[in-house]
Length: 456
Ligand SMILES: Nc1ncnc2c1ncn2[C@@H]1O[C@H](COP(=O)(O)OP(=O)(O)O)[C@@H](O)[C@H]1O
Ligand SMILES: [Mg+2]
Ligand SMILES: [Zn+2]
Image 1: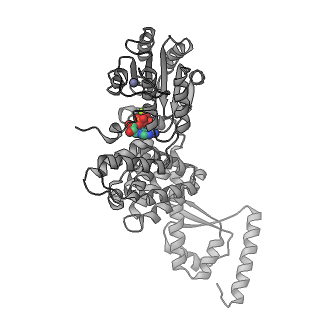
Image 2 (image 1 turned 135 degrees about the vertical axis):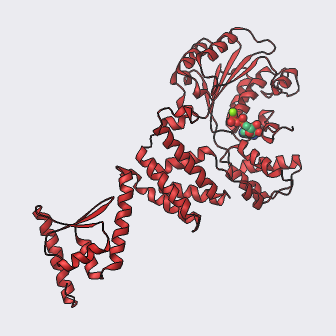
């Protein structure tokens, strides 16, 4: 099987890295001067070049013929590193090897001198996943680093690294890559692979990949497999998924009632050619996962452990409300313009913050709306206007109007009640100030209506 595009085009030299120019400069010059740190942290979004840079560091410091801090790519050591067969480069995925034993093994390994190279290099991917004990063990190694060793910690979640570790390392922050740079890179890959393309289509891929080069190359690969010219239409069809991180960000926007950003993001997705319906169903299922995680006693039996599920602070009520909105909008999108349906759902998140027992609020809102609407349709306007002035209270199964007595004739009350069985009237006995206020309003209305020739 031929190598996938992201693997095939992993930069082999610093000069091939797209973006991150300052970081590359710092690394190259410190390697050239032989003055590099014992510990590095490479932090940044996924698919932006952390592992790539970590391996380039390993290569550059072990290369037999380096030039200005750049590996030659042809010597024995460079070749072995590219083939992942270099004994002095140890890569550990902390997401699956997060315990103390794994770190202990590293500590022990670090005591031996390099076998073939000049330095032993340990790359810890997703370093934020290490356990506390593992971090402590690692800290000891970083405090008294064995000679000729180098630790490189890669992470997408820098804030989760303990300060004690952070302060021992040189920190380098990678950022999302600019779409323009991604599109240029895609263009050069297309030319090398003899893939026929429209420039616009490449830009569209770049926009959709959220600043990550790996995603961009994967999408390019996916669309190029068809073996036809890559056009905007083809890309549009192929772009059916939105990254999980982007979906989660969107959920955070909804939960914080950040309507502006959520609508902007929705329109960006739309413009970038994502299939919005597909995005919306993915959104729904991720909210559902969050709910499951909150509700289950042992969620790990059903769901993959994920720090997002553990650490978000969206209240259950808010999640339930959001799920309901998403669900409704999905149904609505079948019949009306999906973009409009989704935007309406986003607007409704404005009240997320005010939600007390949200399950009640939803029912109340719908009860309120439909009974009042029914009344407005079935009563003479004057009578309805009067009724609207009356203090009312809604619960999921009824609506109660509080009267002072004498506002409506018995006939009117029966007429109103006949419109919906959930309607009740009660006479208020206390609360004089309220009585006072309502009386005044009523009097004003009656006078106004009488002057129009209407008698109740
Ligand atoms: N800055 C970059 N320049 C060029 N290619 C990149 C860059 N970042 C990522 N890539 C491409 O994406 C692939 C995966 O990148 P990687 O370094 O493993 O990402 P990360 O470790 O940040 O998730 C690489 O093999 C390469 O093809
Ligand atoms: Mg990586
Ligand atoms: Zn070399």
